[in-house]
Length: 190
Image (cartoon, rainbow, N blue to C red; front, top):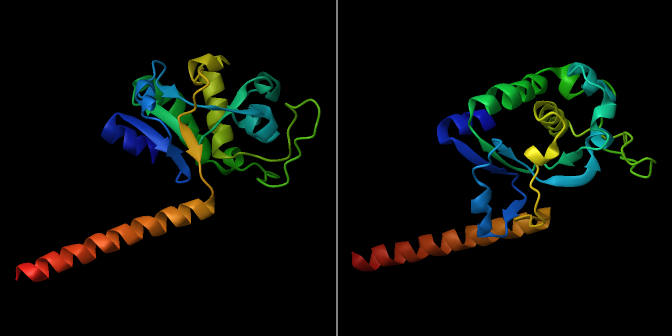
């Protein structure tokens, strides 16, 4: 999906369906120098990545103990040769390889974040987000400043499922009202 959009558009701002922009200032972030811009979580990559995924990439989990896990829910990507070959391709290859994206024993529930130290595996795997995090760490030689937004401003809000339903119903009502008004205008013109 990402690569198809990149091929068509050049740059993309991807957001999950439950993410909304809260500022037009995002414009200054839409053409990242490194080709990709992400926003961090408070977790280390290693805390939400199944240990077997590292084996696929021939790297140790220890390399990722102090790299922040990025949010795959909103990303800015530029279509450059480097990003296509060094980020998108290995990410997609992992996603299409069951042993990489979903190692035996991986699960997304039952996280235990009370483990010390915090970078220890929590028991939860972030699947595609984990793969992207490993690829970015490797590509940028473990320098997260190359791909993680460094300012405090986030530009994004995450909304709850009930808010999505409410938003959808409001849009549907507006569309129905517009259609009804349009029908009334057309019928009075006849």
